[in-house]
Image 1 (spheres, rainbow, N blue to C red):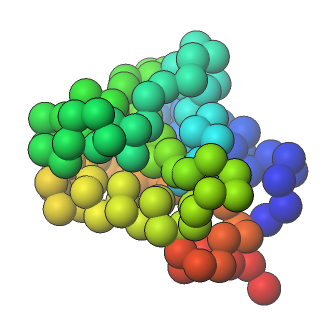
Image 2 (cartoon, one colour):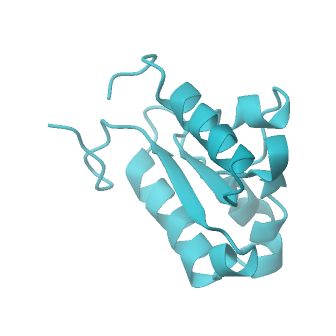
Length: 130
């Protein structure tokens, strides 16, 4: 959907509410702005999975370093992406999500629900809204 309509706020509130019901949630922000989980981690902008790949590589341990515990135990991660106008955000997000999956991090952290806060207008990486 359109930017600024509350997708990230809704995602964070849903993650928080589910965690209070006993659900183990991981919220993954899939926007290059990397601000989806900000309200869950006391206003911080957390390092991104793609940024970590650039500096420390693709290892499971490197990726685990950028997964943070937020409000009420919600696990928070941001995929990250290229700067505006310098690449396809969707491809970067897809790479980050593939790493989370291939390293079986949801299983390792015993996640009941993974919530992906995706932007709705990136066609080149597979995300699009009609």
